[in-house]
Image (cartoon, rainbow, N blue to C red):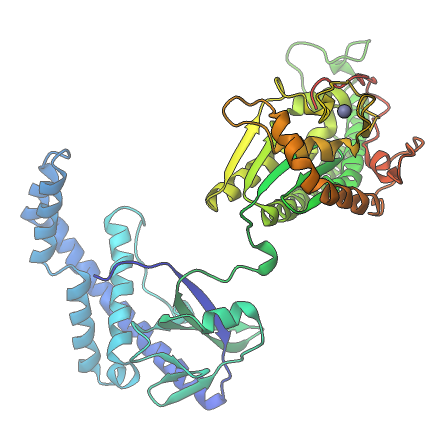
Length: 497
Ligand SMILES: [Zn+2]
């Protein structure tokens, strides 16, 4: 058997006349009947194997003797000709005997049908499927070849298959062109019925890796990230991105909180006996009486949560791709949701920073990158200046302005920059290396700051007066407003970044 190489599928819609459709329908039907014939025969043979003395003996062999056990099973299968090869021979004989099938299908397509039936039987034999089913009309919707040399073939820009020629619809799309320029292993024809109309597609099974969209290319550089509640700073070798973090989710979160409060009020009104006079829930067993109105609110809330989750997924995904474009060697502080909640209130978890980190890590590592998530304990990047000066900042102080050396930089961008120089072994900052790198990168850091400042505010959740520093209003306006019911627990000094 040939060694397995990686492959991908390129799908191309085909142009078909009504005559083509009739021919294809007849060939598909021939294929279906042949498949069912092979499946039935294979099923019988498998039953004979299972009833056989050889099979029963094989079952008794100790499972630690893997080689012996597997060769004993193999003998039982051979005795009753239960193999891919034997079923291919059976398919061939059946096709020839029926004449009609043979006149519609070529040898390779016939062999592939047999293999397909054998694989279904194997799944059952190994307990991966409960049973195999004969295909009804409509359930059998594809045929495929074995190579691109005989039988179903893709040549030029068309399918060719015993007197049929079906042109493909070729558009100027990089994904499609990449497939067409790759080596084709074999071709599959697939029928689909949409709005009662029949369409046929060619699936080219190509050798190699699928086309990677240019915008998702993964870079080889180093990246430092500072992930904050409202913004994320991403510092690559040559480019800095400073952008709101999952800010689109905030308006949905407000709706969810509103519904939650509504539910709470309803519940209290419907079940006065379950609460103590001070408003806490009574201990012991209780019956809850939930009104229809209450249930409606629950359903509504669930729907918004579902949408929020989908939105979060796409928002995180975008940010992951943006990051990896800059580089796959990533350094960032471990995110502590608890620390976030301490400063910003419980509800902040809806942004799922840890999930973002998890996806970033998985994708970077899959691409051969390295990911360091260091503890904030020894680094305290948000308090550190390039000159070595350490100064605590309040949370509202968004710009680092050193009183010793005069360095001025947006604080998240500075933290992200410094992250790049955290030693993986000791998890401490190498200030000397950070100083050395500064000159070459200052421009891109300032660019990122400038560019981020010019982004329009996308939510209007806050009525707090914006902090006026270099047009950074959107930062404060994107901060989550605390719910009135929650006590303000803002720590003035942020010890961890
Ligand atoms: Zn300084």
